[in-house]
Length: 153
Image (cartoon, rainbow, N blue to C red):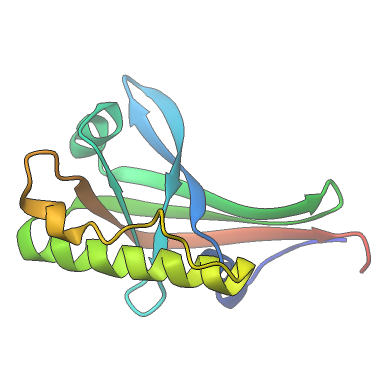
């Protein structure tokens, strides 16, 4: 059986995951890239980071983006969420605060899902003023839609 997810179910899927695919427009064509993200249900925003490059350059030009996250067990057992949102680049103390929140949030999701305490998700908010500092951005969620397929129902 396949059905739509309600808003609460969409938010739970986003909260329980940290890998998604971000889509943005460049030159009139869609581009999609994998990202690590943290979803904050209280602010209904997604936080991520990137180095300077194509994705950031194009999102600065066109702030309309979407992101997909999913859980796929098999071809007949999966959940998927699509986020429509608006890109916002953060700077200074806001970026540092959100990068810390991102780091702690992703560590928590990994621990809850896999029982691991990842060492590779470092506390890198101290690098925010460094020359090679990551660009921290937030996606303001405008719309959430989702689907689920479960052959057991």
